[in-house]
Length: 389
Length: 139
Image (cartoon, rainbow over all chains, first blue to last red; front, side, top):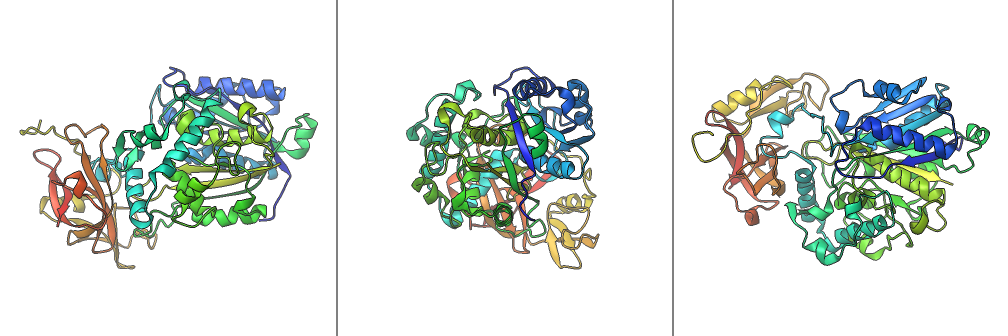
């Protein structure tokens, strides 16, 4: 696919992240819509497309997307329900771009809101009650414990590297007013290494905690943004995704993620290589996922991710700033709105509005999503987007 | 309670996803019976509505040996539904000699003995007094 620069992200909005707010995804969506309208000075009638993320707190409601339209008083000519878990926000931008290019709409709000710490209404069902729940593999920690054990068997693992990811992101969360307040205290390597094991060898501090929150970006054409007077824009110049990577090989190497497949595609589309990337905003449900993405996306060789982490300055002042808002691990994971957390932070940085944690020369960013934990395999959906100034 | 000191665990509704009766009938006979694609000559697990190799319903059920190797493993240490009285719980992805993987508990195994590469053989766990479920022990 040829590189295009016809469509932009021209705005972002984000609520604070908090635990057990007692609020709904709709209420959080309303807050984020108002913030977007205030920031962009747009009238709500300018929004003619809407992409929403199916939240854990509304998982049992097949009509969620239309209910959001009613709740927010929006009348889109294009409506998308993103159900790719943590890939829903970034894939929502990609789908919005395709819909805009196809003339179905012009200005799309890509909105993610979730409140799983207040109300959990999801049931994955399918094969799980018969084949996955009985042995006690009920949540992501057990699956990531399995994944890490295999990674250690094949490549070895340096706990200090995972600790550095947790500590670096924690330092970033200290500078993020939207981060979950309880996580806004410094973390030491000693604290990381003595953190409780929840599913061997996974530690509590390798993991995210469900919170509530919402975020959104505004996607439109470059021309429309100019007409609307939106002078801060970033260009999504490359996107790729894959689901159920090697899904017909039950003996696939589970330490290899779908990013091994889509990494080359997304870099080729943008005409960039990993060393050209200024900032990395990967989906970070667990620290090992960051290491595996660095490897599979080609920042380093497979199996060398821990060395790369230990040798690279990942702070906002460094050579490859990592999740400068704290990521989900240290800002809190707003349920399935989590995929928008990293995306919004990348846009905020590129708008030069990141305040005390501003990255110098934020000329581009690589943003990723991870969606859905399958049966004993690597994660199900991987997506990656490159944003350029 | 199931008549002993272990609480009874949820017994799933059989066949709500695909027709899994042969798997459960196998259990009743002390056999591990999995789906097999007659075209590609490969097993698959968990059961699917089609062969993941051909996309068609080229499927039958066949008994496997129950011998395999631990491909990946973890010890679950956090509570969850059905986990009362079971923690710390050794779990493994077992690669069976027939070339298919299955997630299962490793019974009577100390966490420090649970290791990738260890050989295992089929064993039986009790979901309730009446219903057992496939598991493994170190060989």
